[in-house]
Image (cartoon, rainbow, N blue to C red; front, top):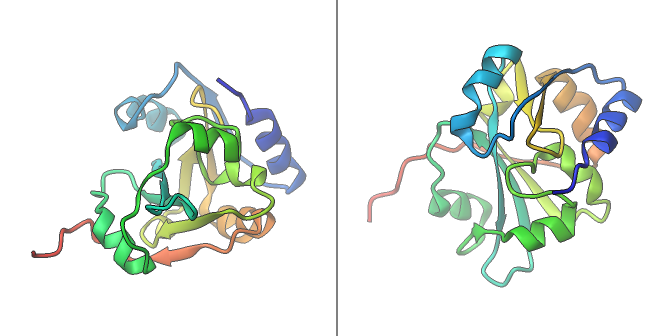
Length: 171
């Protein structure tokens, strides 16, 4: 597994973004995060790597951790048909990270802006957030103000902010 964390942490330092970090056993899913949240404080959002059916458009969705992800809702709000999960090989080829380690900070490895950043509006209301810095054995906490006002501009990926309900539409 690739460890891009040093590059990410150096970028945060260069941008003047303070963070708190803990190292831990590999976090393989949301169920592994409560002990980390207990140490760091703020919640994690889920990072979902998605693509269209043709695999020509790619998206990184940040969504509240316990909010249900409804493909139809996100697809409709983005105006894209049939979003699905991107595969691990494509994720690694594009960002040099593996599933479980992808996060918005990984977008520093996407200088050509091939991945669209999509953020659940509820995430942006948090005071602070936790995320893995390119590897799932480390977690950092940053202020949402720094994330919105420093990190996002440096990444150069203009986010699409969606109000997601996680509710299925009636058939």
